[in-house]
Amino acid sequence: MTFLRESFIVFRRQLRMNLRNPAWVIIGMLQPVMYLFLFGPLLKPLVTQLGVENEYTFFVPGMLVQLGVFGAFFAGFSLIGEWREGVIEAERVTPASRTALLVGRLVRDLIQLLVQALILVGLGYALGMTGSAKGIVFGVVLTLLVGGACAAASNALALTTKSEDVMAPVINMVMMPVLLLSGILLPMTLGPTWLQSVSDWMPFRWVTDGVRTSFSGDFARDPMVYGTAWAAVLFVVSLWWGTATFRKENA
Image 1: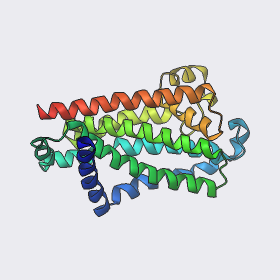
Image 2: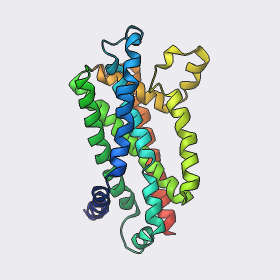
Image 3: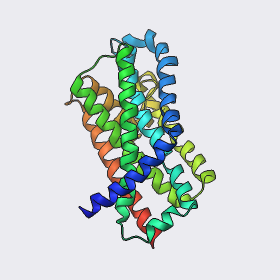
Image 4: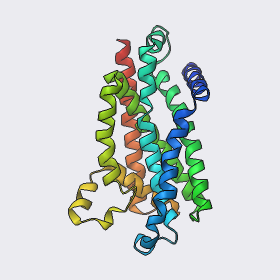
């Protein structure tokens, strides 16, 4: 109960900060919406090759993963500001669990991601997307799982670098191969064999395929199993890294 209370106190403060300045929430939502309206129509001639009835049935799951990965990766920038203002130092002198300091922030990030995901799915339905209701719910859960992993990793990276000038290029260096090799925009099956082989080593590719497969409602297929497993592994490893970083900051 103490851990939950401490996490809630951190979450409440973080939520108030977001409500006072919702610019990051709006900016984080605008990018996938722009992709939805400006890039989605370009996939219409490829509907047959994509194996779907509507291009947005293929595209929206990819945008969910992009929202979870790219939006959450920037969560750490606000933590650098808090560290510079002495907030982290003030939290360190309290007996609060270092895991609670991270979890409270993650809950804020996940609620923000959930709202953005629901808006994206709603827009997808308006544009003709089809899918299983249970599958879409599970796809959103996978998005939250991978988003939580990226947010935890971002917080850990922020406390490690303590500099926006260092963190920004590192994130860009990571996000570029993720965007190109995960099949978020286009399926990797359209590429040459060597590119498909390289993408097989990209965990986010399996997560993307898993979310797309879940939308169809078929939970027994390999992409669904591998995607769920990779999302869970990424979340556990990132949570451990984030917690270890907060504890190291206390040393």
